[in-house]
Structure formats: structure tokens, C-alpha cells
Amino acid sequence: MTQPETSLMTRLTALCKRRGFVYPASEIYGGLNGFWDFGPLGVQLKNNLRDAWWHDMVECPPMGPDGKPLSIVGVDTAIIQHPQTWVSSGHVGGFSDPMRKCGGCGHFVRGDHLWDILAKECAWMDSLLQEFTPVTGGIDSPRLLKWARSKGKKLAPNLALVKNPEVTLSFLATRINGQPDAPPEMMEMVRYLATEQLHQTGLQDPCPLCGAPLGEEVAFTLMFESHTGIEKSNSSKVYLRPETAQGIFLEYKNIIDTSRVKPPFGVAQVGKAFRNEVTPRNFIFRTREFEQMEMEFFCPPEDGMMWYEFWVNERLRWWEAQGVKKENLFRHVIGDADRAFYSAATSDIEYLYPFTAPNFGELEGVAYRTDHDLKNHQTHSKVNLEYIDQENGNRRYIPHVVEPAAGLTRGMLVLLCEAYRYDESRASPEWLKLKPSLAPIKLGIFPLVNKDGMPEIAEKLYLDLRRSYTCQYDAKQSIGKRYARMDEAGTPFCITVDGETLKDQAVTIRDRDTAQQERVALDKVRAYLAERF
Ligand code: GAP
Image (cartoon, rainbow, N blue to C red; front, side):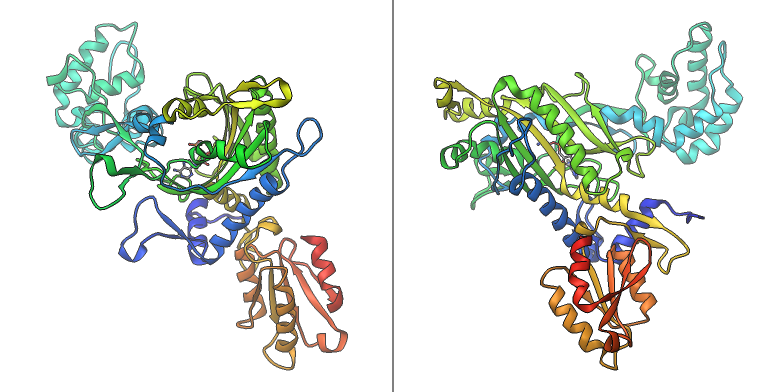
């Protein structure tokens, strides 16, 4: 099957816009980077994923290792909380990215991503490396000079090698030719090429966009700030929550006091979170406003690692149950150096996104947060958050927490990537193979033609079935076009009332995946659907 030339993400983004899944926010004003709106099909798909998570976490949680159902309750806490919340959680002061500003073009780069960007995404670096393969004992100055005066000028106008080629090259030659047996690493050479004569004493890191030296790292906070009340001052400052989790910790004591829960138990929440991401990108993968589905599982300290393993496996299984192929999911155990300081163990559940392939990218994090959050809130609020275990001699302890934290909007992207199909032999080459229970529209209901008694039967069927399924009634255009539209929306079944229906009291049901049609008696339609959903 020939595939179109445009990238899968470009096609998926276009399909999402065309069919009303996702639109760029504020589009009529030119858009706003990092913000997206969900259209009629998008909000339905997102709600279906949210509802599946809520059902499987809160209404019908999994069985625990003892074979009994787990106890998990839900909350919906305020987006804006007391600002001290974010001091205690470590977000104020700690939740920041190390940023470096380019002295040439003013572009900001994440300090900890710089060399990844240079190695993977930087056009001038790529071009330069093609010209320049360091040879032990020397460098090919004429080739580099030629590059600097042609391609380099366009690609990296501020690179020292481009601005001042002779001086930079003679400087580089002295360094490399002076120590022919031990030439510096490739990356170090690039830093030489960015280094101007003026700065010979120190290597400069080059800007991926223009090549000019980057400035020192500064901490850039990801927290969105706002103010409450009339006067804006430091004391009126509040934050939009960067995660839903902290609202759960703040309500932990109320929940213990008012519900019949005792450790081990979980508290789940779905809602918006906000992060002023430096580089929002990849459609709805990394945005500045997004939704999370988080659950904090409170347990006795000695059981923390056991529950951590339990939830990693459970969450992998759950994503598979939503129709994500096992081979497209990956458990990434985060190493000691990369883990948040409060976490005793973290695994990311990763997905093979088209834009990360052949690598995987994060979909959900499962972190063993120990007693970090409750302990800090206890210290700062001076409210005792210990649990008193009356069944065990009034043992007092601060529960440990295991947190499966998934992105709802990112999860929706995973469903769309996973469902996207391209098949030129179909009426709509692009179609979505969504799991039927998650599909935004479950049934398309059509009269074959808009006359001869067909619309009346189709409308009656529609009015009956829409009480149980999200249905769309459509009487316009050819039947082929209507099937194609439903395939693009990921609708699993279409029901057509035709000329025969009046005679045989049966309809045609078309299956999205096989495009096969079956004749089903009108009074058997409900049973047919119940079996398939
Ligand atoms: N309470 C823990 C926490 O917030 P996280 O790994 O920062 O952990 C959890 O976020 C999940 O939220 C991520 O795995 C991802 O799916 C989603 N997420 C985080 N930042 C996001 C962003 N800027 N845009 C979309 N989704 C995001």
C-alpha cells in the first residue's frame, strides 16, 4: 500500500481539524502557541477516555493482590489553591526549566536539552558535520572555509566559524594539530567552531538556530501566576495548578475523616493542569493547558514498593485494554539520576509516537512518592496528617503514596495515533480504528434515500437507539460518502434502512473494520449491538 508523502502527524492533525476533533485555540486571532480546543468529536472522545479511566479506577477498581476489590474514591478540587500549597510541594522554586538565551538571535534553549537538539534537530550542525569529519592529525580547512562562506551563512549566520572563519579555523587547528593523538570529541569541536577569537579562554555552547554563543543558564518557572482580589501584590499572588495531585493531598485528611476508607486506599481526580512549557510541541502531546487523570494510592510505608509494582503492571494492562498494542507500549524505569528527588522509584509508561519513533515517549508516570507530600504539607500547615491504625494497636504513621499519573489529552493523542489507518482501496483512505466503546460516535443511522418511507423508519430507529448509544442521523449525500465520513470519525457501525426494509423488516449493518455488511432484523438490532459493544 503506497503511503502519502506527508508525515503521519501532519495528516492526523489535518484529519483532526477537518472532522472536528481538535482545532488550534484562538485560531481567528492567529492561534496561541501551546493551546488547543476540542471540537464536537474531540470532546466526545476525550470524555469517553476519561469515563473509561474513572470507571476502572473509581467505580469498578481492579482487584488487589488479595483478590478483593481495591478501595478508591474520587474528588474534584479547585484549580487555584492556597499559594503555600506550591511552596510545600516544592513547585515554587523547584518547578523550573534551566533556560539559556542566545546572545545573537534571542532564542531560548533548554540547557539540559541543548546537545540532544544539536545532535538530532539542528540543520546547521547536520550540514557542518557532513563537511567536517575530524581526521586524526588535522582538519580540512579549505572545505570548512567553503562551507562557512556558502551554506553556513544561511544556516548559522552567527557561528564563529561563519563570522570569522580564518581566525576560528587557525585557532581550531592549533588545538587539534597540537595534540594529534587525542583530538577532542566531536561535540567539543563544534564548541570550538562556535568560539570566537575573543573568547579563546572558554568554549562556547552554540545556539541551535543561529550559532551564536548561548548565555548562562537561568531557572525559568513553569508555573502560571495570577492574582486574587482587587489589588495585585505579592500577597495576592496565586498559581494555576501544574498537576492535579496536590489537591488530593490537601483533602486527604477530610477524606479519611468523612469516608469509610483506610489504607490501602486511593483518591482519584481528573482535571485541567497548566504549565508554561518552554517548547509546547507535537500537536497535543505537550501543551500549556492540558488534562490529567491522577490517582494517589495511600498505603502503609512497608507496602510502598509492592503497590508501585502493582500499579505499573495494572496501568500497562489498562492502556492495552483501551486498544493500544502491547508492542507500542514500553516500561521505562527511570534511573536514580533522572528521578524526582522525592521519588523512591518511578517508571514511565511510554508509547511509540510517530514523532519519537524509533524511540518511545512518555504517556503516564507511575511514581512511588513515599511520604514526601503529606509530610511537607504536615510541616507547613502544622496539621497532623498521621493515620491512626486502630486495628493495629493505634499505630501512627504517615501513609506512603504510589501515584499513577496519566495525561488525558496526551492519552487521546495516543488513541488517535494508534487508530489512524491509511488504505487507498477504501472510500475514505484515512480512517480511525478506535475501540468501539471509545469512539465518539457509536452508530451512523441512514435512510438509503430520503423518500419512500425510509426516513420514517430510520428516524424511529435513531430515536430509539440514541437513548443507549451516541448516534448520528445522516440523510445527505450518497451512501458511500456517508460511510466514508463515519470511517473518518471512527464510527464502528452504520445502519442503513433501504427499500427492502419495508418488506423484510430488516436493516443493513456495516462494520467499519471489515466494511462487510450484514442483514439484521429490526427487532434483533439491539441484541446485535449489545453483543458487539
Ligand atoms: N503528579 C505527577 C505529575 O504531574 P508528570 O509526569 O509531570 O507527573 C503526568 O505528568 C502526565 O501528565 C504525563 O505523563 C503526561 O501524560 C501529562 N503531561 C504532563 N505535562 C504535559 C503537557 N505539558 N502537555 C500534555 N500532557 C502533559
